Image (cartoon, rainbow, N blue to C red; front, top):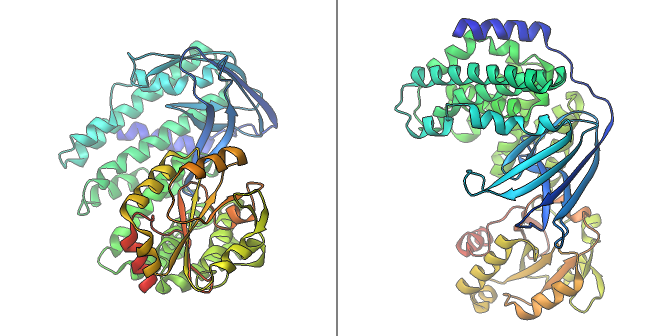
Length: 472
């Protein structure tokens, strides 16, 4: 089995085909046949920024259940649609009908027709026909990695045969076939590392040796593999388990530095940039002075030598935010326009100025965000205004809604821990971009003078952590 995989890898590295990168419009029309959701999303997970991104979003007509997505892409995108995964390509024109089906794990079924409709059903086809369930194997994992690996090899071979059968039956394009060969291989690599999540003391040795036999360093040099988020995900895991393992006895700061210098010394080109980016993300999350030098060094390295545009942009924005800790917010952010409950427009600087002398926790929320509302209720139930006053803490509720009338009606009825309720304007805006607010609720803690203490603070219901930050 191993020889077969090694043979494929050698051929794969030498003869990998290029994916088409022509500009192309995509149109996806759909209809909910019974239960209607308010909106539909096409998403993909960006491992660099560690968040889901929208490929497209569309509102659903609540009367007819119809929706339409129109957008342009220059290359294929592997994205998530509810519980399904679609391979979307330039020029696609499909229709999706969605019906409730309680007999399947998803709770619904899709009927997809149109140009390249087969691209949209292969992921589900693969999941349905592949007999080996990795989640079940992990759940029953006994510590025998070699046995687990053999199951992964079998799954890999089965899925490639399924791809051959499917591509022939549906007369799929060569680009589709090549893309899915890479995708199946990427997920195979990810699966091999899954047992390492099971325990902190997992034996890395057999995994490392097996990957070396597969010539993993050669695979890291295949540029087209990085078009797959799943391969990037494997790279993140490889750094986490295989490389960092040799520094496990060090403190977290020493480990970061040693791993960084190892990566710089032993790797080059694209994989080095990804490894360094993943280390940068860890260092940023620490928000600790001991990580400042490493964060700054990586930022400089990225700016001067990196070629991946997405990584450079991410590091640049993250470093800007990180470097503003303990500083006043930039004028461009303070000038953010916001509504008060009377509909008057003011600037964020004026609101912060009125609260000067107190610590300020900015609660970024919205009516449509169920966790946000739940957190507001939870904080109100567990905290008293007197406690906030004692700690000299004020809550500034900053809504990301777009309907002023619905927002004002809601805050009239809802109980908040302060009257400082405002609504952002013209989103996305400089405030959202500066703080890199991709999901809500999100909390930002400012000092007495308006200086930035924490741009990703604990939730208000975790008030002990908030008060501890203030004390520090």
